[in-house]
Image (tube, rainbow, N blue to C red):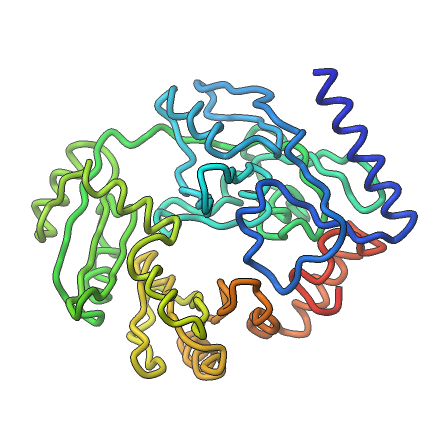
Length: 377
């Protein structure tokens, strides 16, 4: 405990000195998501000294953990009690030595294949302690779900990429592992896959995740079911398709989460192509995409990955907006990310003003991760 207090005091002092000198800080845990964003600027402030589970009450389905804790360590502790983070946060570790952290998980706000069915990271964030740009240690929320009047500050941190403050501790809601799971496979084209998903989405089925991908010219839809044994078995009989062995499909779903499926790896053969993320209404139809661009579709149609050069950005954004969504570059074409400039879809002026005001409130002199999410702050 003394070591943690010392580490926290040192980080607070580092932030205080940076604010006084207006020295930019680059907040970093395991660094597994350094590929994302417009720029990585400032002196590195490593958060991994803030490590350990503060409290865990399996019967209450709540865990409080320091943000420098390796995500794998938290997941292993939960698994030992038959529980999990149901939103399946990606790690994006390139080597066994890499270790995504809990703080990075929250700051990135990224979720895995089950996102459309179970919710996002922010939906499970109950409370957070953070250091703001004035070097003040602030706590928000708690360890229970409740209605909130005004800003739910804890959830503002999810997906803020460290631009609003340095997270030191978070409380998360966890859930029991589902008692039953099954994966069904259907050979079908993209339009048929979307029609199936839309139809199933309107029925009381234990849908958990889906992935449509075209491999060697054959379109295949994979649907994962999770829930009570009776519900999963009944859904398998009603939906049809080919039922796959769960032990065999588990690594494939993990590879989908970590973007290590062959479809993602193919981008290495086209170094001028970026990985585009299209966020759409789940009912959006098949989109007209640049030539030869076949998407990988997740979240029951709401998330579509496309490999295309940056020059195709205009067409991709137009197609996404026409369907009621947006298109952004998730991974830049170049390994060093230098082509990531301008990767984000244009925001409305009103939304941009909200972002600026929040940044001004939490980080008045702009020391946290400057330039990562915006070219102006």
